[in-house]
Length: 232
Image (tube, rainbow, N blue to C red; front, top):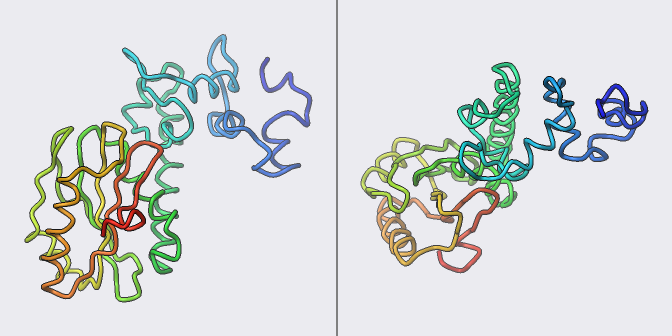
């Protein structure tokens, strides 16, 4: 059934205006962004199929809202029915989410909102098909100065150079950092190498009076704080 054939109070736009965005399902919210379906497929059906697209040959592999939020423009272009305009709108929404989270972290202490840190890092790093090592540089009040993606590697390892991180920390006059990297495998459990690297970076940065507050490991839809696990 197309949206126009639904009762007025069941149509996504009217439902949102009458009852608020929280009353809508994921598919209904996505349908509002897509606005129109394609030939033979209404917008609600298109939205639902997009959310439930599974990994497989030729699929973008979103498998839910969290996966869709980490999709790249190239991922979206491979989905039948998503033209350039729809792809651009979805990518723009994702970028707005990133910027909103960055602004929140710039205005208050990072650890006043630990979940926001994890969400922000997931949006920034989780979609990469290869490992990326990033650093959140923080001021004396532990507010975000900048996020820098510093090193890239293969699916299983990244070469990280402590000297380069120390140089960037001094450049930003950072008082503290949060280390972060992604695990493309989907598991966020820290490896012995992750723990050893954290100790090495903590010692190197301590020489210039920069504290390592946390090391966050992210994958699609999940994040782990090594500080919360008592590993920092």
